[in-house]
Length: 612
Image (tube, rainbow, N blue to C red; front, top):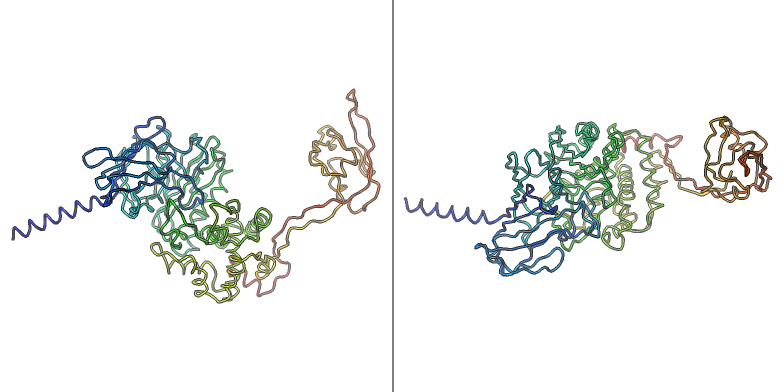
C-alpha cells in the first residue's frame, strides 16, 4: 500500500514538473529603466527540436499595418538550464534563430518603447509602447513579449514589477498583486497580445453594465481628464449597446486612456480594439471638447466584443503574427461594428434621428468622394496591407453603409422582424469565441440563415463593383437621398469679409478664393463695400441684397459696385468697379433627409429599422 502511494506521489511530482514547463513565464522590470529601456526575461516551455525561432509580431490584429515590433528589442540572449549562452542568429527584425534549443531555458532582451522612437514607420500609438520612468508605462503586450515558433498556443504567466504608488490597469486576469508586483495569466499568445496594460498613478473608476464590470483608467499628465467624466460620457451609450445586444458576451471590460500633452509622432489619434478592452490615445484638451470623440470612439470599440471576439474567420482565430493572411470580411469586422455603434445609439435614445441622418449623410459623402466606390469591398479587405492600403479608411464609411443597406434589405424581406441586429446574434451563437468561420463560406452561411436574396446583395454590393443605390435603399424607410451635384449660378466673386466696427460696412479681408467674376470686378484686399448694384451695403442688409442679386440678373448683365479704397496717402476714395455677370459652377453636397410624405409601409419599416 505504501509502495503504491509513493508511486502515485512520484507520478504527481513528475506531472507537476511537466506542467510547470508547459508555459511561458515572463518577467518585466519596470523599476529599473536604463536608457529609456526595460529588461524582459522569459522562461520558456520545453523545446523538442535542435533549432527554433523566437518571434516578435510583424503585425497585430486590428491595426492592418505592418509595424515590425522586433525592431524595438536589443541585446537578445538565450541560455540553457546551466546558464550557458546559446548561439543565436537574427534572421529578420522579428525572428531570431536559437541553436541547441533542446536545452533552452530562457531568453532575455531589452525593450525600447515606440512612443518616442524616431525609427521610420511610426507605430500608431494605440498599438505602441511607452516607457516614462516614474510616470507612465504603456504595455501593449505584443510589444514586450514574443513566442517560440510553433508554440504560441501555450499558456503565459506574466510577472510585472513596478514602482510603488502605480496601478496596472488591464482586462487581463490578474491572479496576484502587491504594492509593487502583479501576476497576469493568459491562455496563449493571442490572449496575451489581446490584453494591453497601463501603469501610472491610480486614476480609475468602475461601474457595472448588464452584469459586466467596466473599468475606466486615465493617464492625463496635467490632470485634465477625470475618469468619472469619461464614465458620464460612455455609460448611457453602453446601456444602449447592452439593450441592442440583449446580453453582453463579456463579464469585464477596460477602457484604457492615454492623453498626449504634445503631438504624437505618428500624427494620429484614436484607439485600438481588443476583445475585453480598448486602448485610447487622445489629445489632452478641454474634456468637453473631447466628450463627443470619447462617446463615438468608445461606442465603436466596445462593439468589438461581438466581432471579432465571437464572430471571426480562421485568419483571425489563428492569427499569423509574422505572415498574416487577411480576411475578405472587413465589412463585418470594422464596417458592421461602426454601423452597430451608431444604430444602437439612435435606436435606444442616445442619438436623435436628425443627428443619425447627418451621420449617414457624412459617410455617404466621404465614401463616394474620397474613396473608390467601385472597388469590391472583399478586394479592399484582402489587399489592405498592400495595393488597397490607401482605401482602408473606407471600412468606416462604406463598410458601415453596407451594414445599413443590408439591415434595411433584411427588414424589408422579413416585414420588419429580422435585421442585422438579429443576424449578428445568430452568428455569435453559431460560432462563438472558440470557433472560426471559413472566409469563403460566410456569405453562404448568412444566406442560409436569412433569405436567398441576401446572396445577391453580397455578390452585387460587397464582392461586386456596383455602387449601393442609396436613393432606392433609403426610400424604403421614408428617407430621401439626393446625390452631390454641380449647378450653375451667378457669383458675387467668392470673397471673404469682415465688418468695420465704426460704420458696420463690409471689408474684403481675403481674395485667396476669389473666382473669375471677382477678378473681373477688380476687388482688392481692404476694399470697403460702399454700394453694390445701386444699393448702399452694410451689416444690416448685405445678406438680403446679395441673395436678391441672383434673382435680378442673368448672364451678361452689367454689374456695378462702388468700394472705398485707400490711396497712397491713406485716404479713402470711392472707386467704381464693373463687370458682366457670369455663371460659376457650385457644388451641392449630397443630403439625407426625411421624405415629405412617407407611406404607412415606409413608416412601419423605418420603425423596425431604427425605432423612430
